[in-house]
Length: 305
Image 1 (spheres, one colour):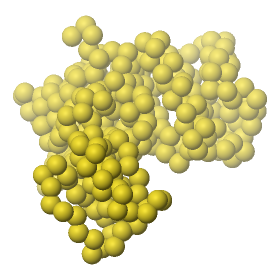
Image 2 (cartoon, one colour):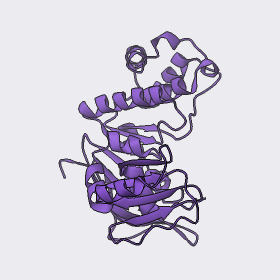
Image 3 (cartoon, helix red, strand yellow):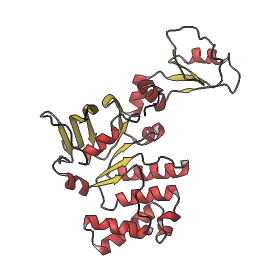
Image 4 (cartoon, helix red, strand yellow):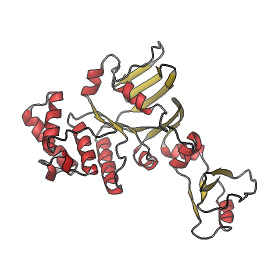
């Protein structure tokens, strides 16, 4: 257990008749980045709430929930004390400036005033917000607010950083900036647990991933392992096609489609190259399969409300 930051074994959560989480198990190694992926309603947020003590798991003698040696159901405050949490929505105080938002938050951790000021200066520099110390929150861009929320989560030097969709709605520059900071934190011993709808984010950052659907874990592994084991290597994405277009049945091809696009998956690149020749340039895209293709294969293309 020395190397384990989080151990989850056979936990469930039921709301009335809804089983939001169903017999879930996984482990997170210390100083690694671990992602919980899944469509809306898969149970990701409920898992996060159980890990931070905001929700209690169903009573089950076989269940285990251990976060650095603590059970959040019994030791919620202890877990919060060594954790940093970045919620899905920015919840900064608009009436205060950047420095004041962080300074007031430092009081929750009983950080001495002198130490708090030093730590705030350090974190604002780390997140490249030093020039915004006296700025009001409403004067900040969306990317700046997100970086400030992350800085706030790091005030107590957490050994566990929990991020709920940390870069949703941000432009590519800000997203990559945050990714670089998260890589730095992991390299320096911080364990990171995140949920995200950006599959590229999970692929770039995570050492291990679980994919949930309807409260259950479907697959688990490293991003590369999951792609290698659970989906074909290549995909011919046909952007413009006649809905009456018929593809010759072939066991080496898996067909998937939406109202506007046709996807041909195969481990045989030559077969897809031959099919691509029947379409005009610009009407198709031949590429390697990625984590998003795998996500859609397992969870489907139907919207989850």
